[in-house]
Length: 469
Image (tube, rainbow, N blue to C red; front, side, top):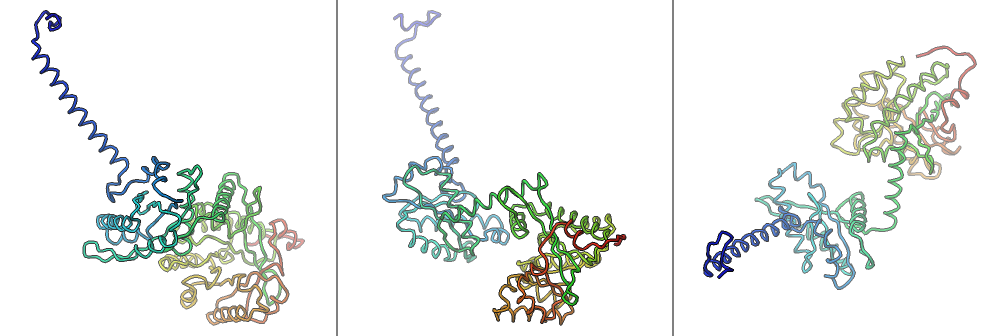
């Protein structure tokens, strides 16, 4: 009886205590059930992609080591990306594109059956685990199966995918290493034309390491002012005397000297090109001012810039301002860039060229014939000079095809009244062949190697100086 007394002496009958206890248990059960549902919902939100209903890659990351034993043999990781999916987003809008992604996920699951290891990374990127032994047949079926049209809201949409494959090692596989290597292979698949599966190799790793070193070299050069310029003389073939210079950017780092093609390629890739182009413009024009002040008989300076500057609204203003500040004649400045390889950029390129020429700068197209706009630019008289790349000059004395191609380009430019510059002349035989063509200017090791500003002044400056513009 005393056990049923409260502190204030009130008596609780046993049946009432039992009822209260049962009620408390019921409340606890409800709370527990609610918490379990909340946990399950949280886990679903954490690991299940709401749009495609696939597991997220975060699930694979969390349970990577537990997922591999589901296979009886070695496993390959495929990193997939839908080719040009942004175009579908722009065309159809976000709602239909999301529906397309859902249908794509269902198709991908079907192609991977009976295995269920399909994960969405983000947007239009996915990861698949599949037996390594089946990689040839699986890769073929994957590409073909995903090419079949998707029917979404009465639209028949065709897709292609690119994928990188990495064969996961049996001993101590690490999730991030597997993803990194499969993504390297994916990048290779994209760069080699898309719509394919490329397997990871040690060569891809070396390329990645080289890219990282180049990225670091450019970054360090920008920070520590490690860039410098050299100038290669351009020779008038009628007089065989140097009449122009081409400025060439260099980086000297602890590994080697980097040359313009590499610098521009990687600077464009990692969005560092604008700062480099501005450096080239300023230092080149400052050097040309010194050359003119030294009365060096050089008539023009050719400056290489990235073709990405055609989209930079401020570049021409910067060029004009620098030219005025240094009191240089813009007619003596040739802006040289590689023509666009994207037909969608032709209109912007034409506007850029017109703006340059309206401000009295000359325009030269580098690597003439490699892009989309060569003949159109000639026919509309939109350029002042074309530059024929060294790849066409190599072995021109013995390669009849190269010789015929160069001769055709030179005569074509001549018919439109456009001057030609041939670069890469290194051998006497090359020179003899080119000299027989109506070529105006040439450059190459046969004439002069690239040299520093001081070397230009020492080599070409006369004894007496007078100021020029």
